[in-house]
Length: 213
View (cartoon, rainbow, N blue to C red):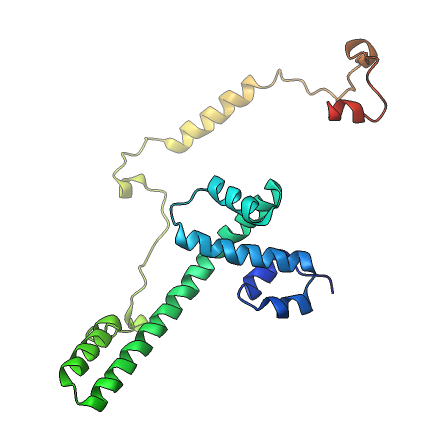
């Protein structure tokens, strides 16, 4: 089994310890994960940062090429939605944990006011005051009786009299106008390429010199 891509490793092991990463992946991928992790945190601290600022920051911090810096940028941008969603779930969980601990300490001290405020914050944050959404009674939904029709009046369009005859007449008219079209077979173009595109003295067989210029 080959080595996974840097993106896949960053996706699954972005916050894994460096020591554990070094036991599983080549050093180049470990360095990539460390840079992406660090620059992800940079993006959180600088939400208005531009791509150019990101690239410049990576190059300055880690002494990498611009190509590598842009590669890191692409990985971070790919991971941002996933990490943001995971971060929100984590913060929701931590908020509830903090509120429950506050409530427990207040209850131990008999501080009913703090207990009440903690309970109110918990209820508001988790929206326990709202009714649960009711399941739609799908078995009671009546399917609309759609019927196919070629009558344009159902759309408010005035029908054209004798429409089928008009269609037949138009087909016959344009078919008669195309009788003079002649089909010809494909022929190779007889071009004198040596005359039209003469090689210069700097040209070579494989074109490597031209590509380098």
